Amino acid sequence: MAGLSQIFETARRSLFAQRDAMGVTSHNIANAGTAGYTRQRAELTTTMPLPDRIGLLGTGVEMSSVSRLREKFIDTQYRTTSQQLNNASMQSRIFSQIEAVVNEPSDTGLQSMMQGFSKAWQSLAATPEDMGARQNVLQSASTLSNGMQQIYNGLSQLKGDLKAEISANVDKVNSLAREIADFNEKIIAATNSKMSANDLMDSRDQKIDELSTVVNIRATQDSKGGINISVGGVSIVNQTDTIPLELKDNATSLSVQTESSGNPTQITGGSLGGLLQQNNTTIPGYQSSLDQLGQSIMDSVNAVHSAGYGLKTHASDPAAPTGTPFFSSYANGVLTVNSALIDNPNLIAASSTGAAGDNGQANTIANVFDVPAMNGGAVSMNQFYTAFVSRIGADSKSASNEEQNQQLILTQVENQRNSFSGVSLDEEMANMIKYQRAYDASAKLVKTVDDMMNTIIQMV
Image (cartoon, rainbow, N blue to C red):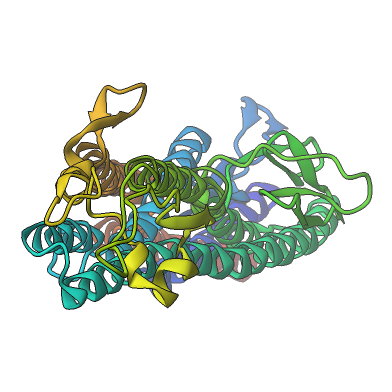
């Protein structure tokens, strides 16, 4: 009887083990299409053998645990690529907006306005005493000034929009950090109670993946089962505790630091890294180039104009240089035409000698954009602006190419992750049949032992 009881117990254990393993399989099948779900596996192990007259005799099987098929190396690759992809994607999006602000090449771009300014001076050179031609020069100068100011202000407005988006991204980082810390608390409690926390770990990994789209992170697991997160070298999640980040406006740039101690973070990845790069470096660099161009236009035109001669009010008036600058100032995209010329267009210095019909200064100013006057006399203003527009186009193309490359890499890594951690319905169906057959066999074993016991009982 003792032998039959042991066989009965072995069969009973098998029934429970196969039933529980079938439960794991059903859970996998049910979540085959669930985003972020990690395939689970029933770990069946033999139970401790018992001594028998012929030696140690096996006592069956039990489900010792439910493992989660997750590869840490693939997760790290996925999150690193995700950081780079979202950084490039964000920058590519902003470059598209910058290109829309600059609006080149087009009939309404700054290049066309510079050409219009030159043509207005050419027309004045043809009829230097014509008042209409002088008004045209002032109008073209105003158009050029407005065009430059529109680009500069458009970039400034874009920076303002980016600041609001950067602030929203920092808030998102803090929110995800709190959620990860909450999951840590639940997972640690479940682990300490010897309970499976696989589904909680899946939810936590989804939040970590989402966080990697925003910033460059480093995730490490501790001995208690918690995940600690650092961003740009600064810890923001330490088991169940979080260290919130805040946005700091440094007047000329933005930075992210910890709220409590003010420790700066080195954010270079994710959408937040792309936003900071554009706000702190790229857009200010473009504005600086516009400042160089605006200052050069003012200095070059004023140098010629101030040495020229205006239109005499009376033929008997002596010829004398006006000494009047054409532009009164340039700052932050604002190229201001001298109000004295607006009030008295006769002061526009088209002549280089003061003689009637002379157009020397007008001709010189008409060609001023083609004179090497920038970068130490290496390039003309036309060349400088063409290079400026080309640089924006090249930067935009580079970001777009990087986005495409990182998307391909992420797709490959995601496929690797799915092949390792995703649910294969074919495999689960095979497992289901295996556990079903084992369960059926165990049930038959129970019935067989029952019949054997009845036989023995009836013999008594």
